[in-house]
Image (cartoon, rainbow, N blue to C red):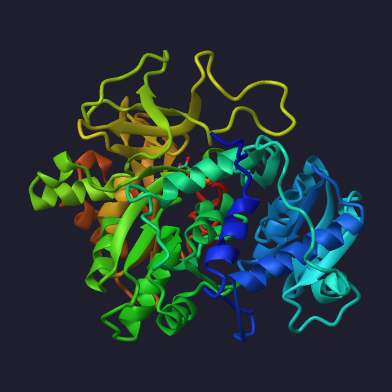
Length: 535
Ligand code: AMP
């Protein structure tokens, strides 16, 4: 067979060659739409490569981005990776201190930034001395001092060689959000990204094809866009890049205007989407398939999306895995089950896609796949981390498995169910309470927008659950209502009595972290300081 290194530039080369007229659409922050296609994107990416090379950028240099999902962000992504440099996607929702830590730790030297984030970039450059050059992408509304991408590539042609290097070179860098300790870096190689993309494209993964119109709601800075920046071009699907506006109304207009068939994002985003449609009395979506991951998909959300006509696929992953590891697609044995049992399986996190998985007890012994035994979820595979950036020590166990920090069971059909993050699970009177199960039970209540359960110290039981609730915005008759009793009674009818939280607090807004997930660390601080509202 031919020597054919698995470098990600091949995805964009193939898209331009075989799907050149397929559209890529971007929405700017001001709502303006920009339309191009794979031929245009490929050429722009190559010109960026040429300009970078002529400015002295070499293999292994770290080029950061601070940007939402857009065509130009994609062009920079491929322009950097195509020449063997490393694209480091920074998360604009992180605090200045974290961004400075991450940029310095990674050794970033260039920064491509959205016009609307230029001030944040300027603050970052003041604290990350390695960043020599800032280039503005998506420049609408920006008239500051930094050069625009257009000026940077002016005079540069697209005649720049791509690839031709070892597939084990690092292509991209992403840091975990660091909810405990400093953020940690994960270096994705060309090979791992390629294999991960191929796995997620397959029917048992996301099932992507050239017929799809893909909306990557999940940002490029959140764990590699869950691979969509590679898998979309790999199949030649139309891409709809949403920019920074991910509220329900903005997503709805984009989905309908561009006839989006496939989208992926975290539950809070989809909750905003279904709430918007419900408030507007809209009963259908042109979306055909939605992948929900990053946090557990509440059953009520699955029901709401399916009622709109979209098929929901639950998936699980983490930054350390590139990131997708489990997808809840059907197997023959699952399809042979009665309808309610099939739905239970669809609500589990799924079965291994491109990875191997096992659950172990605290001593490291593998537990049976009986759907009942619960243990630490460990994984291994060609797109799973071996060690964090800059760490001397491997992140793996002695026998080569990565501990995900998640608690799970695996059933006889091979479906994994995550009960909690190890640090979120609540131990009460020596027994486990799954915070996810309590939250999911309450989320079916019509007055509840978001719910989060944390464990708090208790003299007798060790820990007891405490429930925080954000009420629906549309709820007007709030005054004088005893929500605490209402919600406790509602839960008591649905979960074990001793799981019902003793304490219920209604807050204005449940805190959302940098990747759009509920931030329980802030709730714990809120509880400890006795504060009223985190926001
Ligand atoms: P991150 O690296 O920020 O994407 O976070 C990874 C973590 O998110 C995992 O270790 C899980 O705890 C959580 N997570 C991701 N997907 C799911 C899911 N479908 N259900 C429950 N938790 C999830």
